[in-house]
Amino acid sequence: MTSQAPLLDPSIFAYLESKIEEETQVRETLTAIVQRLEKAVATAQGLLSRVHSTPRSQYPTLVAQVEAAVKDEAVVIAELNEVASKHPYYQYNAKWSRAMQNAIGTVVYCAWLGGFPKESTASTQQEVGRLLSLEEVGAIFSVPANLKDRDSFHLTIEEYLLSLTDLTQDLSRLATNSVTHGDLSLPLTIATFIKDLFAGFQLLNLKNDILRKRADAVKYDVKRVEDVVYDLCLRGLVARPGADTEMKTEDS
Image (cartoon, rainbow, N blue to C red; front, side):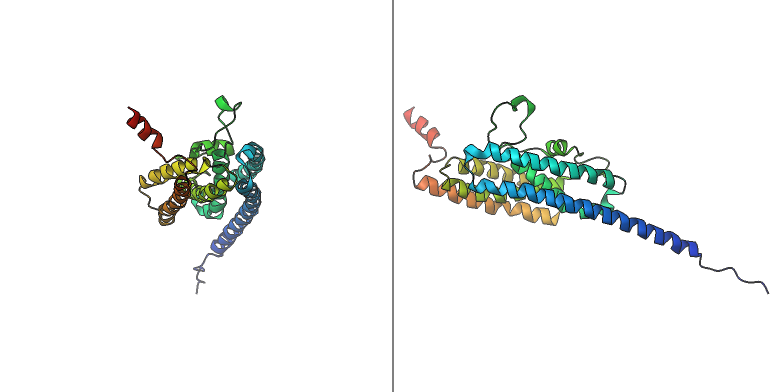
């Protein structure tokens, strides 16, 4: 009687065990990097929060500090890029997506306050209200943005758009706090910017449920800033929008 060969090859489980150990090691490495990134982002966010108690004349000093903090973020992101690019993007991207969204947010906010000027205007004082593109953010971090090769590490459109919804929340708060510093023109700038941003969101056919809800919520930030501007106009502290045009029309 001949012995029957085993139906189960033990090497299958040995291979699976090695793959599990490999994936566990990758996840642990990525977790450690993301934790360092979150710490760097928290530092930048802490600096940015000071804008609510900072007069606009002191923005350049604050912005310079945030730019330095963003450089620290970029160092960690470069390490994340090196490790993550060795593996399929969508296998692990959930581990860093939120941290990257927040990192993008610090860059976008800093630039809005006058940071990261273009080389052609680097020698002049930057005005508030500039919106960086996704590609410009990628250049600051030295990371590709919205790659055609979606399996490599990159900044995503979703991360960028979500960071913009965070920006509108911060700016709606800044509109109120700037009035306490006697800066009555900044709420007008913020109102125009947020309205234009909300109009841009409405042009997008968003498939992501979370992003669609966050983009729709921007209308509440618009309303908060409009209330600030309305109150200033009602008290006669700023000119009513369109008043100059109406006056010219009457004179003619």
